[in-house]
Image 1 (spheres, rainbow, N blue to C red):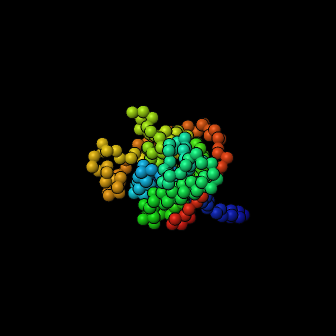
Image 2 (tube, rainbow, N blue to C red; image 1 turned 60 degrees about the horizontal axis):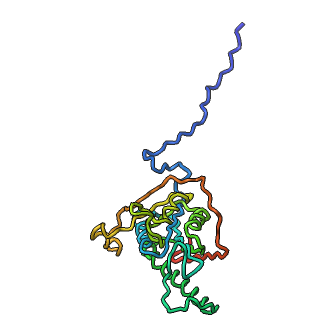
Image 3 (cartoon, rainbow, N blue to C red; image 1 turned 45 degrees about the horizontal axis):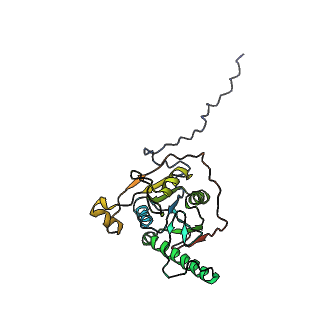
Length: 252
């Protein structure tokens, strides 16, 4: 008696396997979560020539399409003198001992106008290149700590700032960073790019760079310092807090 034929077996099916091929360049693989993400770049400014140079440097050497740019400025609570700023410019001959409320209000208004005008001047390279940005101004008596606090609060990816300026002298004859930039390098929660302002010793090229007469080469002193993530801000915040955003091109 012939045996019944055994049922045919289906050939084994292969499980679906997804293979992702990474591009040869290790800089920014297209499959990484950060690909195409918008960077939030902060430029710390104190209305000095050093800050203006840092903005120019960032425009020509660091910023790229899609970046959200924020100019961060910490203004003193006392318009006549600040611990980190030194004496502040007062154009009119005010009686600084006058306690008249109207006089004090006039001084405050004039200084706020000076700050806004100077900040707009510093931001001109961004306007020229059609780079959207915002100007973020706060008031505090301690520039160093407040600047680091605002960097964290704004969620910045990187901070660009000048090596000097901020009303502070260098730490020593051998030091390269001013007290504010040095503090930010070690206390900010994100990488800090410190841009060296050309000195007279740099030769004739230094003057042309400061005047914007030529292309600015990369003159960073410190690029990405190792950050002490264990440090915490002291929390000494001024009672008077003023935040003003001034989008000159478009809001970020």
